[in-house]
Length: 357
Image 1 (tube, rainbow, N blue to C red):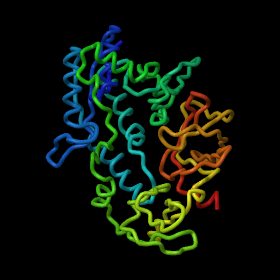
Image 2: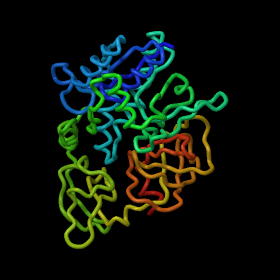
Image 3: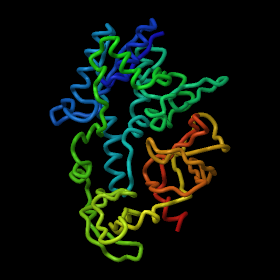
Image 4: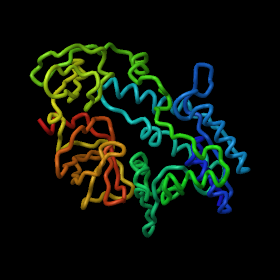
């Protein structure tokens, strides 16, 4: 089989390329250039850096496979960076990694694979594809500690037919051992934890220099008592505790952001618990399922048993069996049935305002 491997320069995608090559497949390595400096250079910090691209090139050379860097900076800027800034300006909590997968990476990788006459696209994500009759299902990885199915929830059965996740049954320690046995320089490279286009900088500074409106205002409680002032709503997300004036007693958290009046509402932890909320722009891997469901309300969170009900096209109400803390508008809610991922959507800004009050 002829396979396009998405190579980030990390150990996971390096091992994917090595495993597929050792299995006799014809492998082509591709790195996406997504973010660049003022002179068109790749960034020096975060993920997707110039050093990462160089590591991917060296791995491809070691494996003796073709390797290309493709420029998708315009698509990334429009669909991910602009969205990131816009979400904070609206008082929402973005997830740029999900947005990148949803709006940039997989569409372009599948398109590029077709151009290169490849049969499949393979990535280093920890997730599993299971075939059931003619349907392709997305499941959690066997190694749950690294499961990444949450950030892949937008992939449909049709897309999964063209994709491979070879690491779905392998643990991270095993991946590093395989990389070392293949002599790959990425074997013990640390995983990047940074937002690629922010790097080591504070995201508040990144957004603050690009936002077009003045959103300074008051920090208040639910009774409109003023606790202080803030420099912009983009510096806050629902559930945030850092930088919140609390005074004496219990810690305070951001409970709601009023964009129209530039107010940041704070309260106690119990004020953040919710049992019902809405998901917008919901998509399903196959058909919707309604029994024995659970949901993750942020990446790497616990599965919470739930029920779902369609409200409108693309909008579903989620009711949790037990109230939970810190459901943040703008993040994604991803629905599971056991290990099988059913679908997901964006947590609505209406979450706390219309359903729970």
